[in-house]
Amino acid sequence: MKKVMKIEGMSCGHCQARVEKALSEINGVTAKVNLGKKEAVIEYSSDIKDDVFVNAVTEAGYEVVSIAEKKGLFGR
Image (tube, rainbow, N blue to C red):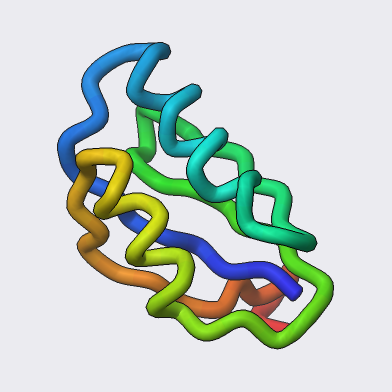
């Protein structure tokens, strides 16, 4: 499963790495942050509530603007 999280407050590569680390420390989660788009693509294997992702990013010092399921090509 994948989700896309929009994040405010990141301004450099250190910020990007800090958010990736915070999300990846959640069991069963990998995350890739795109600094230019101000978003993280989160991949996870088990059912994890959005609050867990939001709390990890907030505790790292950044603001979550939105979180949504990532759709495949053509909305599938």
